Each structure stands twice: as C-alpha cells, then as structure tokens.
Length: 429
Image (tube, rainbow, N blue to C red):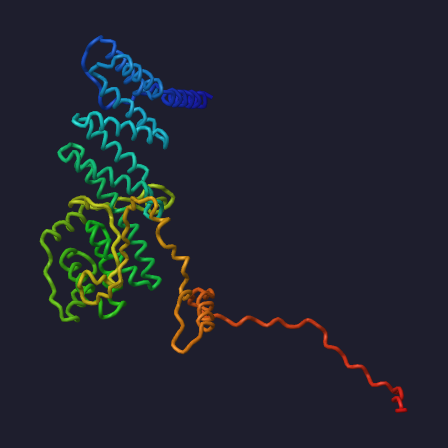
C-alpha cells in the first residue's frame, strides 16, 4: 500500500511540474538582455517584457514592448525593444508566428543595418526557412527561400560571427536541392530520355560540386551521352576526366580510367586539393543509424548528414541549362548551328492610336486579292480565293481515319409471292 501511494504521489508531482512549466513558470533565458542597472521607466518596462519572454508570456511581453516604443520615442532601448518583439514571435513558433517574426527581423535590419544584432536578425530569418525545409521529393519553396536568406547573410555580413554557421547551412540546403535534381535525372535516365537526363546530371555536377553524389551524377551524365551517340563523345570524355581528377576516391574512378583508355584519351592525375577534401569528408561524414533509416521515412525534415563540411558553397541560384542536343542559334557561329532561335523582342508603343491606324491582318485573308493566273479567268481566280479561305484542318501527328459508314437499320423489303390466279389482262377493243 505504501508503494502504490508513493507512486501516485510521484505521478501527481510530475504532472504538476509539467503543467506549471507549460503555463510559463519555467524560465528560458533571453539571448540579448541589457545588464545595465537603472530604474529608468523605459528600462523597467524592457526588463518586465524580457521576463515575460523568458517565461513564455509572449503576448504580454509584446504589449509591454509596444508601450515602451510608443511612450518613450527617444529611449536608448528602442532598437532592443524592436528586436525583442521579433524574438518573441520567433520563440512562440508556428507558421503565423514565424511569418510575423520574419517581418519584424526584416524591419530591424532595414532600420538598424549597422548594429551588431542585424547579422543575428538575418541569421534568424535564414533559420526560420531552414527549419521549415522539406525533403527533396517534396515542395522546394522553403529550401529556395532558406538558400536565398543564407546567401544574403554571407553577402551583407561576411565578417559576422554568424557567417560560418550560415555557410554550413547553405551547404546543407544545397545538398537537399542537389538531391532533388539527382532524383529527376535518375527518373529521366530510367525512362530512356537520355538528353534530359544528361542535362539534369550535368547541371547538377557543374553548379553543386560539393554534393555528396556529384561523382555519381557525372557518371550517369557520361552514360547518357554515350547512349546519345558518337556526336556527344566530347561531353562524355569531359565527365570521365572530371571523375578521375576531381573525385579521386569515387567508386567510378577505375572504370572511368578504363573508358578513357579505350577511347584513346589521356588519363589525368588526381587533384591533391580534391583528394584532401574527399578524405576529410569521408572521415567526418555521419551516416544514419538503423533507427534513423527505419523511422526517417516518416519524418518531414530532410536528412543532411551527408552534406559537405568544407568548401565554398555555390553563391548563385540554381540555373537550369539547355541540353546540348538542342540546336544552337546561328548567332553563336558554332559548328552545327541551324539558325533556330527562341528570342522574342518587344517594344513599348507610345502612340495610343497605332492600333486604329494599322492594318488589320484579318481584313485581307490570304488569297483574297490574288491576281488571276496567265490564261485564267476572273471566275477561276475567285474560285481559288474561295478555296484559300476554306479553313484547313489543323496539323496532327495522327493519321486521319475515314469516317465509319453507319449501317442501315431498315429491314430489307420482302418480295411479294406471285398470285396464283392473276387477273386477266384487258383485251384490246
């Protein structure tokens, strides 16, 4: 009986502690407090708001901070108060609160770009989208936004203490983006769409060289070029050369060397810098354990443990490339140019009456005003004009089938049987 009573008592105390902590009695220290000891009214308001934030009373803290901003417009704590409002939304969490936090951080960077906390605000914006990033086979909106915000931090605050962490975040984000491109390229390759597969793999290897499977992407691109024909042998040789030189520890190195020797091409040596980088990556790479592999498919967050830990990430947004199988415009002057171009020119028309003054193309259909041919007549010309105006069927890749003839549903008429006693024919008078 005493043991059961003790267990009930322990369970009651535990539940009480849980509910008290969830009600805001547990303290979470604030990152940017003001340690100045003073009894100024604005400082008292700021300290009270920070205490509310630390105990998860976010709405009360924002009311207090807005009171400080509106009442003491010349206070030295205005910038800190505005940053604390953004931090309260960030700590509250949730889609709505994070959107409000991003807007507040952006306003803080706009009004106080020279403060040290501006870099921290930009780092929080990057972290907002990074935490909402989904797996490679899902929506990539948050990954694109996270990469953009991390690049903005590295460009605007390159000497900040948050720059190294943002650089690593950018490597992890690009690992997810590159994995998405790799999956699309694999799909094209398995379907036999080798020009599309080669374009995906080649663009991936060129723009994300730090991707953990960049050597696999080059190998698949070379295989796609090989299947496309001998006219793409140059691209195939280039991918084999990059595997041997830039990814010397890849599992495809030996076979790539054999392919180059079979094609009578020189085999390059391994780049020492690339060799050292791959060795460091393999030593520091963490693979998912058995629980992670089993339950990872049910999670929403992507697995970024295979992301690179060193090297400069790509500072440009991923740009889709044009497949090499597409004919090149004549302006490039390259061999094989066919003059095909997809450029569209446009200009602004300032004359508002140009449309009324111009000739309507529909007023003169083709062939309406055609002159009669030599030896022809006006009627023949008119007939040709009418034939030209006759709408022609649209082009199609399918052979038109003749219309099916409807079978007659009428019953065949039966001939009457001959009369056994026919009427006598009339005798002529």
